[in-house]
Amino acid sequence: MTPVSEKHAHLADLDAAAFLGTTPSTLRKSRVTGMLWGSPTPQFLKYGRVVRYRVSDLERWLAENGQLCSSTADALVSEKKNRPARREPAG
Image 1: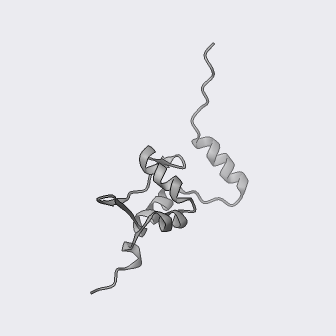
Image 2: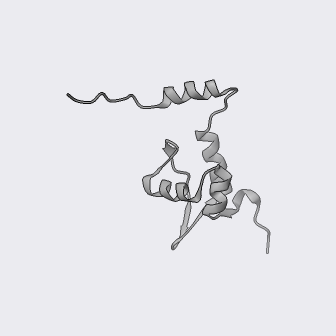
Image 3: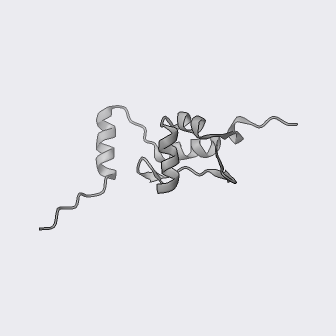
């Protein structure tokens, strides 16, 4: 049998969460809500009740949804730009 390349390896919740720097619980919840950290959830595969993530899909998700910053201030400015406007309470 031919070994599976790392890019096409399938990761369970625990390993996928570690890869993304989150918890398995957060990853499971994101599959229900469709959102992870304000972005659409990474693609996943389902085999019956078993869920797996391809490393290549996780890398793509990080590249598309992450941001390169040279300081914490850069990250905060970018975060504010992407945050939806606050709604004022009616009254």
